[in-house]
Image (cartoon, rainbow, N blue to C red; front, side, top):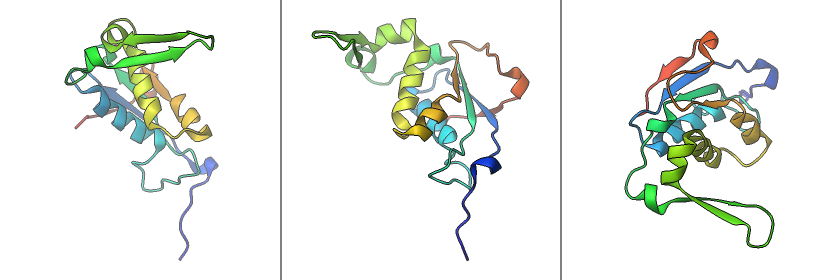
Length: 143
């Protein structure tokens, strides 16, 4: 008996919606990364992008546990000498909560072409309004 390997042409994508209101940011990111990667499917194949599409709503209402709001920083570098910029997560969650969720999910995806392609299927919104009503996303509960 041979192992079943799904082909790129045979992948069928579904849409899922995750409500991040009053849920820990990490738990929301883990669920989103699992769905984007396709690991929730029985026909998961590591070398094929077989994940689904994810819509995350209420990103501004996601919570960070412990002292992470004050002690965790988002770093970026301009490429010039002395160009390191640090943003506290309290500021990041207040100004760009979509970016905080996207960064958390991006860190949990593989660092290759499949991970980059998976990240394009992530749609994050600050509040409940989103543009994907036509796709009829299925609600997924964060445990």
